[in-house]
Length: 389
Image 1: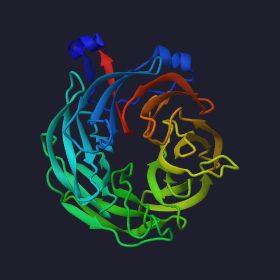
Image 2: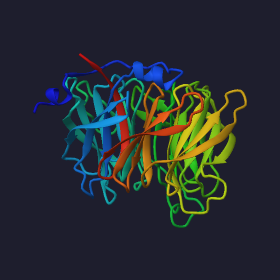
Image 3: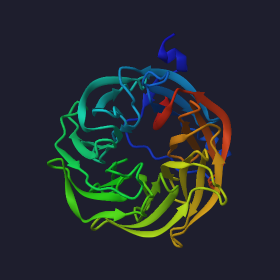
Image 4: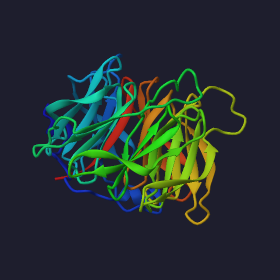
């Protein structure tokens, strides 16, 4: 059976940035449903063989398997170039310097076509991102304590790193914070700064981006300090560009901040727990996202096995916990929200499943769609819109 007949149609990946306007009800949304290709990054020390490709039906939340890309070890985080035509993946090898793999995305099928790989310049690369111009890839190396920047060539392949920054420092947790652990790297909305939550240092390092020469330059201020022992992990901007949020793995908290785009400075607003009152079990945060309209903030709890849902008021600047929705699985790592803000997908590493949820766009609450995909050790989800020919 061909891939085209498998779907019953040719898939055309839209090679332009598509933002789907949010709807006021799930029924209206379903009538305007836009399907997505879903790339699933995994750990390959189980049954997984690499990066998996699914199709998400946004009318009902169903995930349909399409294909897989093999030949890569531990593709634990993925990034898609603006325009949707190239995908970059870490190969998270902890004992030695890892690699960043470059793939072209087939516009007919969405399948990945290997281009090349380059050293991430550090052990244990755990996160990769692409700047908004689509010319540079940035990587965070958790075990190696470094961050790097690599050029994207004209054919989408990667050149060798043009800059590597080594972090120095530690914090109060003797088991997890004896040394630096850059956990992710994010580019500001205006493409001028890079932000690196470092779990080992309890800091969000801030760099000025030199996108002519491919350099991560010291900034003033050089960092934002989180609470001792909190372990900052992932980071996101509010759609307005005026606020930012960091989720801390060790403390199970979200910190909201004001963002000053003139100098890259972050100013704390408040820190809130991602766990319900009275919870005493072991839990570690992983990922964070806002809804496309900025009214809600979502964070994943590994251990409590839930997605924490918060409302956020731009005027009040306050986060208010709405619910902690069970993820129908174990150890939710990465999760994703479609651009229309109608479906959330949660990747549950230990239970080997990706579960889909409806998002109530008025309340922010999550409801399981009843659909899931069984995938060995899923840890990253990236979406590209598709359309019927």
